[in-house]
Image (cartoon, rainbow, N blue to C red):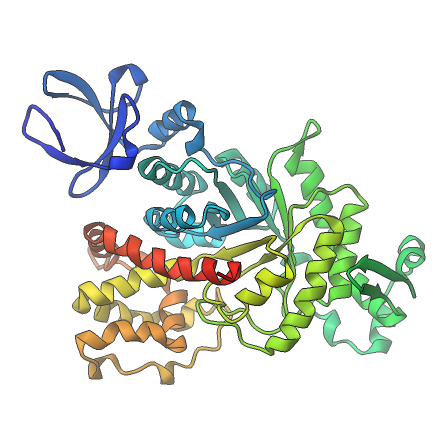
Length: 478
């Protein structure tokens, strides 16, 4: 307990005591208690005759903390075999996440992982996301290294924004350069649209490539031409971003992931090979590639599709990645429990897994457990907001399968999070829920939600330890 001379009392986080600095908790927020010589900004207080600085968890103080304790800053970690991104949309989940990674020290976290879309829907910035993770790393005494991902950035300006904010990983979303119309063209239409390219034809047309492990990639004329039409612009975009944004003065500034998963049709193994080979032969240094796997990776629910087909194709995708020396990245990985053992096995334990929205679902499940009345308000609002939210996410939710909440007892509310349609209802409406306002301009739900999460922060950390721990345990096959 830290007590000031004016009678204020603060609980001390035991893992945060570090010489002349520690982190303490008040009812509504956390602070640093710092020796004045350390240079933190804040209020001067006296405790037991000694002067201290009671410092808010501001960006300026985050910068000071990272300078003093470099392990609280993100770093490039994708060269490690096992990495997991755990996007924290609310800025309150990292304590629970770090319990998982202390339990499984062979896995390295990407603690700060947000897309521009998520930043806009939560009214946050990359700096805020990184600061929140940094403070939690200090609070929990986690010194094993972690990363920060500018996730699904699409443009040069977005890449610059992420890098200038401190992101140590860039996930380039090439979806806007991938031509989804080609997949549905006839053979004749593909041939008519294709523009001759002697360099590529000499490399790929009617050629086969042995990538090892018994995997041979072949291109007949139709597959070659269709692949060129679908992916050529995406490859050009990735090359441009890498050499004009990721590399500066010959130095690579961040780990680089190329995402080709945000498409309507799966990435065939030969198409994955084509994209990778074109990048590697142009000296683009990729840490991970995210193909669009067969089946559906919808938000917040398990894999939908043929598991045997997924396993057969994952075997080839993983072999291609090993051939070129990068890792496979599995996007929308939240709650895909049925494919985790296969993914861990076929990648031979060298993978990158991304989760995000499931942390929000656990937070709202906690609301259902602790304040049923507030949850009922949120749930009913989500039903009205669902249609608008589908502009951001592809889901097959059937609202008719969501139980009528007025027929459920308070004790039954947490069980809604066992149902796919109920999970997706809450999952995709997060931004609208957090931003909804009353006529007087105050937030309808946000302030009450954060107050509850603050009150029950230990319980939230426990939920995340169990839930994200389930993900990690399954992909490690333990």
